[in-house]
Length: 429
Image 1 (cartoon, rainbow, N blue to C red):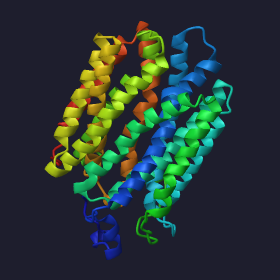
Image 2: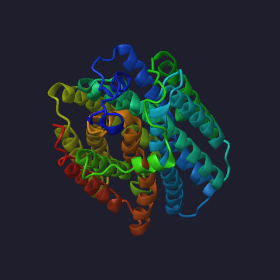
Image 3: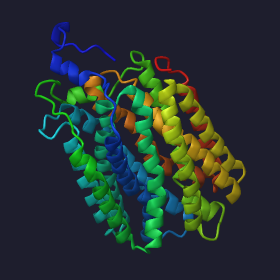
Image 4: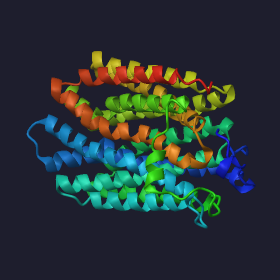
């Protein structure tokens, strides 16, 4: 952590030091429960559209004669949404670092992100044109970034280092449950497109309210952090990998591993429909997602806590990246439903470990604790943007060869590259 000093190298006042200090008091079960519920709402609202509602909506209104066109249409919308996330994450983080509201620094942005995300989903469900679908999904994805940027910063604000692996596991475990819960609810209830989006919006709000209303958020006094200008924002977007190499290697690893994971999962419905040609692709998707979910939960909570106990992060992130690469290569060269089920288990084990431990690692390589919201916003670009661009890039790979083998090979190689990148981190064990 960098030293906190004022102008001309004069030591910072005690109030500024307190906001820059790394937390030492452990958070309790109530805090973790509300945090996990909030993330459950976030993931069910984000991933149910990505995995099911949005691809089917695009396919319905695109009315393409070739299935590859459906993949490309979905990929284009996701890619445009990813471009907006490049600014939304660090901008929200930088603004929340400076927010002096009586409600706290992060809470106003959590509220704004929740309201905007929910409203965007409701309007998205009413769209009947590809343009309308695209605009609304971009809006929904942008507010998703606003919300998750503020939620992620709460870890650095309130959770001590020796608890961050376990607490971060309560980001990834709800992600796994959110995927399967959303799919099952939409299909079991036989909901229309609008009904599916409306249910996701309602769950987002209901599950997020306890953390928003009941968890304290420290109020930042005025003039503790320098005002934000476009110049300082743009300058802050660049964190020199030469000056802060651990931050740079962690960021690169995050980009590569998440891109590899997204290549392997974002077009899974299309892989089942047109690659394996299973009779009931949607039911098969639920089976694979359920297997994935079980192993994500086990890995994220157990291995996240184990990394806290051992005080190690790199080895866990390295091993989790290798497991994800193995899962992708199995899908590439053994394209059967049985192999896909085994790969889902490996992928869940690897990605669950990665999500919890890598999040903890990211909080330990930040250059400046006073700008941790902005710096974690940059880290979050590496979490979300690959997920947004992967459908578009993956669609191009599928289109180029007329199949899915190349897609999964690229997924595996990318994850292996991420494993190499995290092995270069030196300042964290």
